[in-house]
Amino acid sequence: MSTSYEFDAPDKVTVGTVGAVGARSFYLQARQGSSIVTLKVEKQQVGALAELLGRLLQDLARPGELQQAGLDLDAFDEPEFAVGELAVSYDTTADRVVILAGELVAEEDESGDDASLSMTREQAAALAIRGTQLVEAGRPPCPLCGFPLDPRGHACPRTNGHHPPLT
Image (cartoon, rainbow, N blue to C red):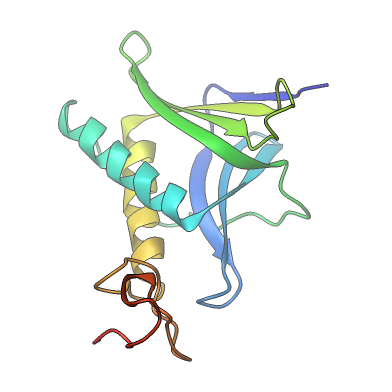
């Protein structure tokens, strides 16, 4: 049975990590009152979400004052689900940016859990900034293939592993 998480006026929407650089797990989290939903996401999803939110916000009225403090993840045991699909839209009637997240499911499964996070433009802008900061705080990308450079070495698929890329 699928579960839907709907946050139409969250107090906080954030992204965060657990673990050391190179072994971090990324999470998208929303809190509304005493309800919290935590979703496991990939680093690339956080980067794409931050970029998409930034582009969307450029076409809207400038957000008010951003809250950059208090965006750390709240404590959680396990994420509700791993995100397979992310979508972003703008609700003109409510003046809200909406993130839709769908669970990563096997092809043979018909449906999975989902979450809808409807946030203010200010929350969306703060989320975009925080997401960008988290992604940039990681390992630098290989200039040839884009995969993260590992301090212990990098077998670049663009060179068939024969020559390490220049850093």
